[in-house]
Length: 147
Image (cartoon, rainbow, N blue to C red; front, side):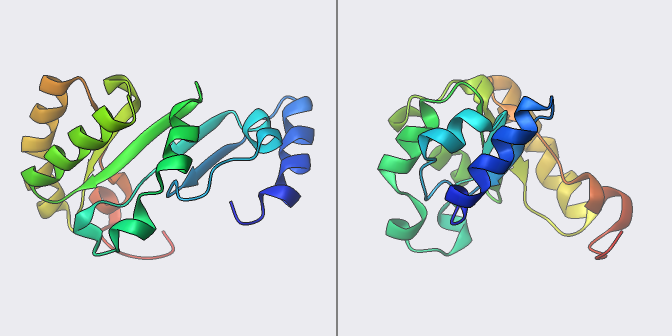
């Protein structure tokens, strides 16, 4: 997002040639109009308290509101504890996020931890209408880089 002025023409050119560009961001910088128009899907992954990041740096209301106004957006949150889901629910309410646009993913660097957290988290997703995602690369290869 720091280079969106330079990336927007490239993304628009690719879009015009039939390609779809997808961007993942932490949601702290709002998309400029030309960038917003050129991107087919936005994956906004705001940091929660569990990240250890300062609140003012991880939740920029103007930026999250800008993303929430886009049709082509999903919000993905990394979950460690059940209390994290409460924080997500507060954010979803504050920014009027549709439950189907909210994705919860268990944090973990081993299949065992992902399975443990994923078991209860999948139930939460079903009950709240959120989507569930796991970290498939961890399930398959562990925390090994370059696979």
